[in-house]
Image 1 (spheres, rainbow, N blue to C red):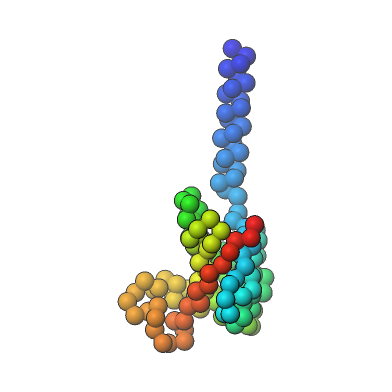
Image 2: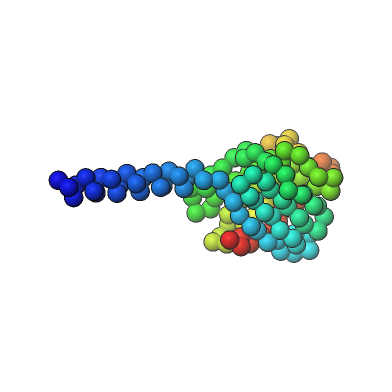
Amino acid sequence: MQNRRVAVLAFLALVGTGTAIAGAPFTAVFSGTGRACSGGLYVRTQTIEWNSSFSICKPTRYSVLEKDLAADHGRITFRLDARSRQCRYEVIEAEQISTYGWSVQGYQSLEAYQKRALPGWRHSPRDERMVLSCPMVRLD
């Protein structure tokens, strides 16, 4: 009887730990590759920062628009609460493509992110529709 109680308590402790881990905020450090994407993306518990060759997004608070990290190829999308003067992107989407490899996209507006799948939107020559797509490596 005593062994059964210990087993039940151990099981409940593990279930509680799994729930705490699942609810933990996403944090990560990414390093960009290539000329336009050199720099880093830093996702902290309360701020996000993305510095690249053509855009400097200083640390700012953010909200998570979408999050699916359960699969091997997770995806998470952030909306910056405020942009620094040299920051070109309001929405940042990160999608895991391999163990350490991620594809990170920067959208200039929430509208651009929401309409990204519409025909003619993503590859439009209009400036407000330009998307920065960066291959990045997760360092942590």
